[in-house]
Image 1: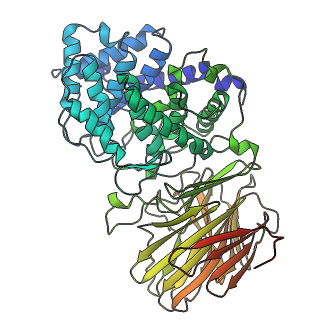
Image 2 (image 1 turned 30 degrees about the vertical axis):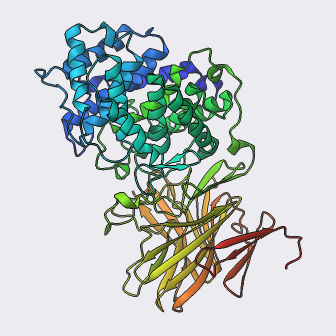
Image 3 (image 1 turned 90 degrees about the vertical axis):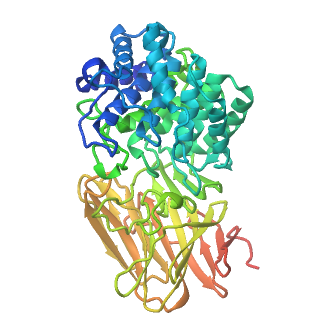
Length: 618
């Protein structure tokens, strides 16, 4: 990509394009932006407010970053929207802030935008207009929110009210900040509420809002606390982006797309980043380009519900036509002046470009492994399941409970999805399949992690060992006699049908560019297969998932070993590690990349040991 595509001027031009493209959908007075698409559960009025609030956040970064030196029309239309939206007599007035309402989310974007643009917008309103804005925002005081990142919206809104002399409750600000302390699990990671809810909200919400609040309030003690956590988080987070800019496809609200880079800019903005400034710019710029080259924004300049082009199954019930504009957070870097090193320093390569990487994250229960030859990032999941917010009798959330996620593939979703990808399933004779709904994290260490799940009489303990592009999965399955055991690989999707191949012990699906998803049977599995689908994957219209299958479980407990691969492969398929099962359910794997791994699956918790291949066996 030419250097100009990662310049500050390019980010400004992209912001201007996004802001200009929503203009045809503005209501009279600019209080709402009613974008085309299916309404959310909150209805078109709330969705219209969302269109204003989320694009106002983008406009605010643009305005404040330019110190107000922007086309006057930009300032005028968002000032007009403030005046009209807070006028109860206006036909497009904003709905009041009520308990648990979507308006609470949007109020935080408006308050943050008002703080950043105060000299050019809020302070230039008339006294009566300012009073109406304050009165609308003050509706947040005392309101109930869900017990997740929403508690921070109150913190931002009431901090702005405090700045401008409006009504606020200091205990609600401190209470929101104290609440997230209960969800901090260490090493820079927050769960989004109780449970194991690890996803991008950790970065674009649970780090973002407290750090920005500290910047607003001047609270140096909390600022130092948040800075230390953010620094540790970014040490790991920089690995979540492929060489071509694609983020790992995991968690909810993925339609926010390039908002994934917000914590990178936040680190630079607050001085809490371990990344060289040229690396921050390089990663962020590649992410922006990654989506722009693949249909986001679309030919109208709009961000639709989807990942690249429109893909409705990615939506949550709260998603409306303007929801994708939380992507505005990606432009936080515009608050850094043009002379800041993040804009002027020479670019530096991301870790994924330099060498193969492996990273263990015990807090969320994740392993991450990347390969520099193809720039692919793979995330092995032994911790995040979002179980506490899911219906106890509902289907597992495919964005949380799969065994693995990557930067180049997405889970199969929607009513037609067959739920084979990245899941080890035990299938009864009547076709009933076990569900990995509640994940029990068991272990995480160097290139190794393990977890278990229980579903009725079925218990599956899975250990993963990563080696280059390969993940070796070892399953200890307790099940009734005669049940089948199936382990699925990555769902490979493209706009054309993937090429499929099956042979003894191997199943694979490939794309014309060489990217291949493959699964090998290494122990216990007796056959292979590939399932195909249409319209169930955010990465392309056609998708295919290779899998391995064991026809009949012997009853009691049995071991199964597979190799799951995503990357380029030679004609004969992915390399084959040597696997040996010894007495006591000890699995010995001679890795293709070198060395030997022994995994003891005989106890409640798998135990891993390593030795160099040349060392004598004890």
